[in-house]
Image (cartoon, rainbow, N blue to C red):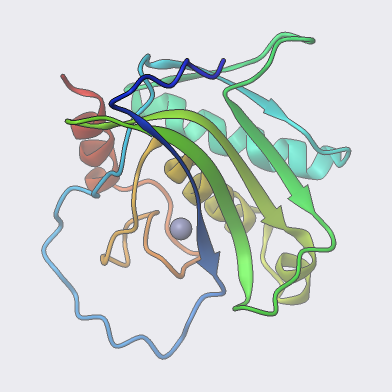
Amino acid sequence: MLKKVVKWTVLVIATIVLTLASFSSTIFASASKPTPSWGSWDATTITYKTNTSSSYYKSVWKNAVKRWNKVGVVQLKAAKSGEKADITLTSSKSLSTKNGKLAGYTNYSYLKKSNNNEIVSAKSTLNRSLLTKYGYTKNQRTNVATHEIGHALGLSHSADKSSVMYASDRYASIDHQDKVGLQNAYED
Ligand SMILES: [Zn+2]
């Protein structure tokens, strides 16, 4: 539920995108630092809903949810029917890729507070046409889904290619630095 916006908070609505994997990257290998974060939910139990008619994409999202739950910092629970979910997980067949080749993206809103951004809603979308066109395997699509849920949980991009939050990747899954980054985001 959207909290009442009080005087000292600002509701911000934004989007982070994941572009098609680039093979000409000049990013240098860096020491494994914790994945940075931009905010967090106010509780560690977070509800989600998969909003797609495709059983294939339902299963992609479900596998990505399982990966984050295994980390043990937050628990993503399927919202009961009729209940509004915190995070909506969906896919689009007709996503415009004019401004960069988007594999997936996450919209979110948060309350800007003095010491933290409190996430109040998030919606992650997979670009089905691009994933099919560029031959992403199911595991690679699950990696993209895991990346998008990472944003929905408050993680930012990592410059490290072995992080699931690397900005342009289909190959990485959750790495140690991502676990530490999530822990940092949710500790008091
Ligand atoms: Zn991203």
